[in-house]
Image 1: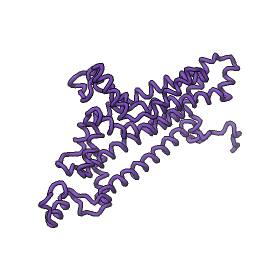
Image 2 (image 1 turned 90 degrees about the vertical axis):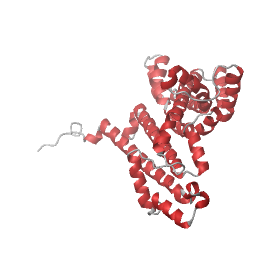
Image 3 (image 1 turned 120 degrees about the horizontal axis):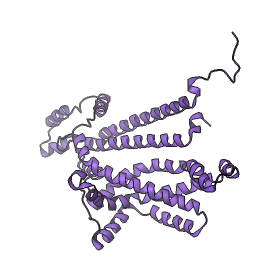
Image 4 (image 1 turned 180 degrees about the horizontal axis):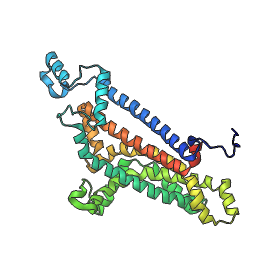
Length: 336
């Protein structure tokens, strides 16, 4: 049987671009599943490290050795740690995060009641950070070396060093108390007040939370675009007769967005973590306040539930960012 020349030989399926992309996606999923299990293992270990039990919340002065043993048996705390961990993981798979030691309520239900608040603030802060950071980064890169570029750099540096609680306090003092344009606290669900009233209560906390994201995305995007405009493929496209504007928007922007997207994946956990302070300033009953109250009470299952939700959100968001990076740079899937 005559062998085909190498140029005409059939390529293996995983040698194609689609196969390479799917392989990279599979590798990312494996990494993030591993991270999830490691993070949940550490999270579950908090209970053993804390040495706490439901007895200190429910028995108080009536805590006798017999009563403590009976209560811990009721909650399954007398089982081996690995068995409790596997049972806890099985519950997570079906959306059951356990019961609160404080009031016996479902942690999933308690968190669901606060999900809209925290995700609304963090989501709007993320949108503000991406849109404003993109505009400032592109404008700074397009006008590199000008007074506009220097002004944007100074402005983003100032934004990056301002803590959310300082920004939030200043926004309340100016726009809520001074000008009376926005409410100083509270949250109104969409179903009760409509989209306008919902956004009206979200703008100030979202802006306070977005400062750091705006600053980092603008700086990283500017640096990436400046570097991309110096690459040979951009210079070659201009030499071939393409207009600088078209080259910038179709070539340089695609190649220079990688650092900003990577930074965005790193900033998402800060948006969730910063909600603790922001919710306290604006009187919002979200994940942050629930986590702080649960930690102060020693309600370990509730704290574990908050951490699990945060882990899932961060892992899912970073997986999305990696898929976007792969879309912007397909050569990464081929190992180029």
